[in-house]
Amino acid sequence: MPYETLPHTADVRIRVTASGLESLFAEAARAMAAIMAPGCVPERTVTREVTVEAEDLEGLLHDFLSELLYLFDGEGLLLCDCRVTLREGRLTATCRGERFLREKHAGGAEIKGVTYSGLRIYKEGKDDVLEIIFDV
Image (cartoon, rainbow, N blue to C red):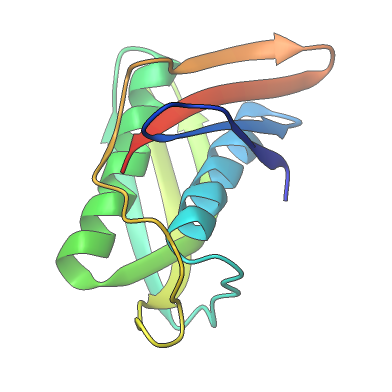
């Protein structure tokens, strides 16, 4: 998986790398799901459409991951296979996954929120990179 955990005193901080912004956002969703349910390979039995709008990329990423977290908390959905499209301040995604089952997906961290603190999206060579902190 193209993400790594970075040091942080209290929360979970990660760095995600991908070629292209749409892939970067999809990999961020996959990384967040892996933090909540390590080793999860979803059966893709559930599909949800997600649409968010924001003025910048950081806002789109924050709102997208927050919506996935809302679906996890509210409906018990672990969505980590997303096809993302970015267009002029709008993100649309088709996300697939499965219902979260504590006995199947044990061992993960409980993510309480997606933060703007430390959120960065930037280029590194040919790759797009993001750093983000999850409140646990």
